[in-house]
Length: 558
Ligand code: 1PR
Image 1 (spheres, rainbow, N blue to C red):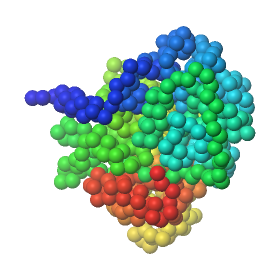
Image 2: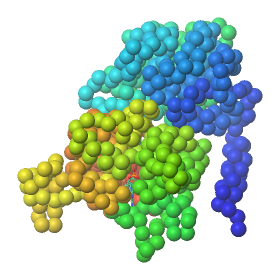
Image 3: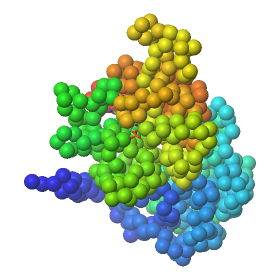
Image 4: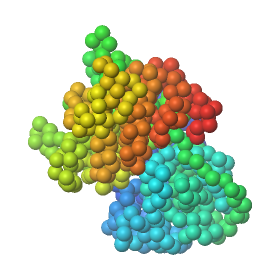
């Protein structure tokens, strides 16, 4: 019998033959500065998809000799600079830029061009540009900025030409000030409360705050423009553009979620439950193959894809190679952010080998994840914090956030309503509800659960979200067991309670049954994103229809 791996292998070959028709192969070698701090797989995949070959910087000399260099900044400002110093890359990078050799910096790599950053006080940057990179200050906006925003071009740019009206993917808490960058460098600005520098360019040296490799087809084309652009000897002075009073706006994100598990036949399938029960007549529902579905949603316009390994609390993910393979294969063809959750926690295997939660997360980041999502382990960490009143520094949230940045840590909350007659009947944070309980109770609190909703704990959703933010989480994925799979719309009461209590982005989840439900949740609450599973898997409503409904209702979308 043919093994599943063999079939995947053949499938991949056929796929690459199919794509090769659209790809021109180039002789130029692209050099990637990967210092092992996070997900650069997607940059690598994007370059390969565009027909170029990638090689890694092996030593400082490569920085100077590379034909075209890409520096995908991953991690905090301090950790990036520390690694550059450790590897002797600082001087060659400054020299390369001084010599006007092709350079593309992404995200923190743009910030590294400045003198320093509030993110890592006392750490010197490359000091090509003056000034300090600072944290966003507008208290009405969630930080990090996570999502698709526009750009305003300040001068002509062959790299951005044709894409200046597209939304591109940003994820950052710190930004460079427009006042620090003169017209010789300022390429584009973006608005998030205030205007900040989203692109700089001088001669052959370019850097973006957004991630072209995560910005769908527009991002791939921008990357292609950089890769294809001829190197010019002299520094070409580009024509300044008259910047009208244009402001950019961040889009509300639509996320397709794939709950993945092995079914009784041993196949890895996308499944979907009703209130977390994924069996129908005793069988695990099989709604499709993870890699294929992810690709379909990307093509339909999903802004992000989330995979949840829903048996993660039982199984150890490092042994779960198929899940890593799902990520690897998805990242070859899907150029929007990928989140993976389920089983992100520390673990000791049967041979006594200990893996920290950081080890597990690192494996996922290396396989193509941009963010990891923590469920049960976040509840335990918060319980411990509430008991001791102090941070241990050892929780998965703290460790992963410290190394990869807050924006890489999502907390998946699995709450269920507990009804009470009056707020005094419980020590938990209640809301007055318009859908009373079975005994006519007009109040409820949202009890957090672990192990895929199987076990309720003595903390509520608001406590969990607030404490996780304090511990370093960058985003909340707010599920609702009562609504999950019901098609009855999102629980606005829960969403308002949690959104109002944190200053990090919140993703509304559970209950979407129509495009109108997305319009409603964005109108009635301040959430930054909405996620759905069932309606997309059952092909009841394609992502494109949701986007269309949002557009018709004046909701900013990509
Ligand atoms: O606890 O860190 O191992 O993480 C386990 C993860 O798996 C958690 O994120 C948890 O939400 C998820 N999970 C566990 N069991 C189930 C289950 O269904 N039996 N899935 C499960 C929860 C995720 C939701 C769903 C929305 C939208 N489902 O995000 O996709 O409710 O559904 P809908 O649009 O069809 O209503 P750990």
